[in-house]
Image (cartoon, rainbow, N blue to C red; front, side):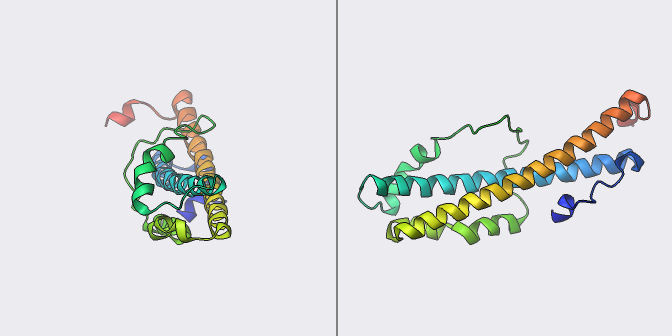
Length: 172
C-alpha cells in the first residue's frame, strides 16, 4: 500500500493509458477500503478504552470481561456517525492486508482490551493516546488515497468529456 502513497505514484496522469488509470484507481480504492475497515476497528477499540476511562472517572467498579461484552452495544453505539461527509465503503470485508490489522493489534489487541480493568489509569490513558495517534495516521492515509482517487477519476471524466475516450470502449 505504501507505494500508492508515494509522492511520485501518480506521475503524469495525462500521459497514462486509460487502462492504467482505471487499474490505479481500483488499487487506490481497494487500499482505501482496507484502511476504512482498519479505522473502524481502531475507533471501536478507542471507544472501549474511552468507556473504561469514563467508568474510572465516575468511580465505578472494575468491569470484568463479561460486563464489558454486555456493554459493547452501548459503548460502540455512541458514535455511529462521525464528523464530515465520509465515503461509503463498497465492502465490509476484512482487509487482505494482514499488516494493517497487525498494526492495530500491536497497539491494542483483544487480550489487552479484555484486561483493561487491571491496568493502571496511566496505562489506560497511554493506550487511548496511542489509539488516537493510530486513528489519526490511518485517517491521513485514507485522505491521501481519496486525493489520488479523485485525481484519477477526474482524468477519466476529462477524457470522456473531451472525446479522448468513449463509453463504447467500456462495452467491448
